[in-house]
Length: 266
Image (cartoon, rainbow, N blue to C red; front, side, top):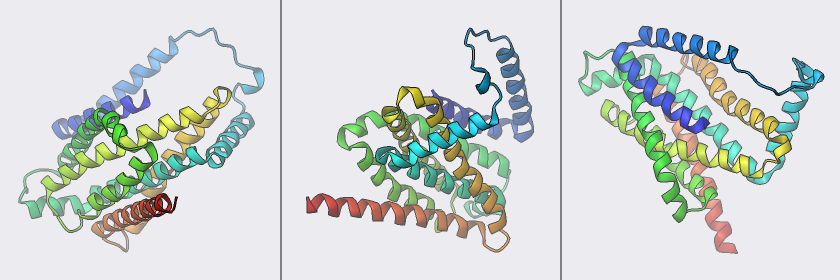
């Protein structure tokens, strides 16, 4: 369900921003939030929570710690969680770097001088949304050729190359291609990760474990966005993007090489 929501969010939000601009997008977003609040108010449920669970901050902290312990102590789950965290961190660096003057530089070098940056960013997000759709469609056929962990290992060098080459190829249409293919590869990683977490999660701990997983996944994005604001004071946006791509490629290439060596040794 969350994967489908991400697809709809990226694709629709990107298209709205590109067509209407960020101001109308904020108004639409505010209306949707208000509508959701009204719907939640009228939801009726027969579920009765234990008294210690109602609004208990200490209970939340205990549940979060238990969920994190499971994520870090289960080998299969830790494999996907660590890679999702790295992916979301790299995405945060790239996204914030693109929202600076670098996107305008790409537009100028491509010869697109009349398009505003916010509209250009909206189209990039819309193409990423299309990539999410294609990625979900292609995931099942891909898993017939690769095992889950092997597919993730193979996708990381590709993602690193795609991101890193933006530094060398400052072309807006190439950036759209990167967004499309990157969305495909990224949603495959996220889909496999959620499936693996659900597969290895005991039913009694599902809420705690998924809460910890989503918090950790969002933390990578938030940390990167916060750090990028500091990094741009002494490093150019294109250098930040090159560094993010290089880390993804090096990490993916090394882990893929180690898998091949281990497989041959067996």
